[in-house]
Length: 369
Image (cartoon, rainbow, N blue to C red; front, side, top):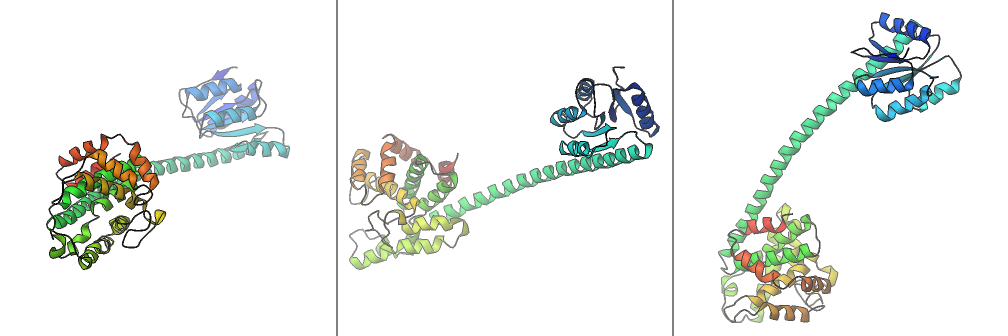
């Protein structure tokens, strides 16, 4: 007998001995189980491929084309979730050990009894029921996680927008004090982010640097108009007050949780690589990387922008001046990265920033992947 494949299946019985197959088939069907039969490993695998819903296989350990253990291995590789029960007349303990080590669901010793077989099959049925319940629960859980993740992403986007609004409001407050600040802050933010991206900083670092660059002068809100808007040269005493804008800005920004890291750039944006800067006279790597990058961008904008007391100079002149200060005012690694960017990069950024109407939009675009 080759094999008998019914249109519906619950159990696949793999038994080469005709008489034993008939007895086992009668036992299973008497117990109410729908059963398909096969007499070789090859016909069993063929059945499983064509009937993926079959969940239980009872197989004789000794088959004509390969052992039941080999069939067990094949089923475990190709048919996840199918329970395989080994049947054998050999009661040697090592067979049971081998069966379980190779992933058998159970082992039945011949001659089979109705009660023992029914108990094993009932146990497998309960295991399958539990597996299906678990699978259903996992699918429901995955759906719930997906839904809540989507909601969380929406919340995070709303929060991000509120961050941008906060930054914009702080910038507007400074603009009311100094009309030149917005144009400078926007340009220097774009320059800083372009250089930071060229240095392969990640998106999180870019966000921090963009926010710190845009808010670097926020402390000037606390500087008296008589000093902030003075057209002439500041006295030594006035210069001390003006320089305090770094600490003043830091005290303002650090109180906002999402700007805590950016506050370090606000505090350190006037430091110099050789330690001659202020307010803490930091040296080299003591200065936050974002502030070291900002220093180059800030100088680039300062040289190329008009001031009440002078006209802005060309970008070529700015490049030469910045390169001259390599290792003194500026981090050599940052200068090396700056000089490898194509010359047209910076005028193009300046032109693009001039068309931007909102600083927060500039920050969003600057850090976009």
